[in-house]
Length: 271
Image 1 (cartoon, one colour):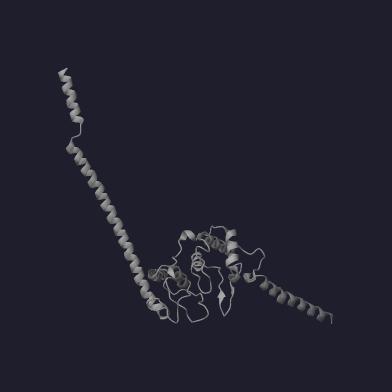
Image 2: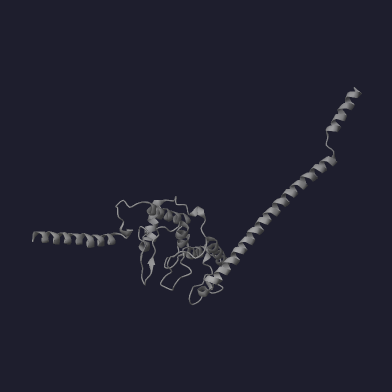
């Protein structure tokens, strides 16, 4: 009886974890957790520092490009001169649109800046946009998620007719304005440049902020324009998609001209 009791007590004693072992396990756990946290924090800090350094490098490069190509009209501090407006607060989207479409720098002064081949690479355009954006808050370059041409075509067509067709034509073919200005055709224009134009209102175009047209509304308009661009006209020759005036003029000149020519030919044969 005594022997069995002693053996049981020895077994319980061996199975019980001592205070030193418990403290050691806690210390190992704390060291492991602390080491992992320190490693994660240092990695995150390094990534953040690298991103900050890259961003600052881009801004510095953009400032140099701006001073070389834009400061003549807009001033060294982008505050504007008699030859060009202030760019403080226009945001990265405005720079990306104007420079990315070749409208800026302007070749010659005129009623409005014309689209032409861009003089800069995508990286240089992004650097100038980053510099101007660093001067004051403004519209940012739209995210790719806002540019997918899979919106509501019907809603986009209605919004375009209400807000844009009076200048750009219902098919986006463009049209003349006053004082030598014009609304450019929208065929072949990239989705992010269309979005930026609605955001910033270049030239004579009004600004459509998110209170006027939501991001989804803008995506629907882009969807409609891309649908028109990629869908052939069911009526055959489009005549520039300039509408019934152009089509009526075509019929009047060429149709009536053909009738007169046939009449003259028949009269000549009878004589």
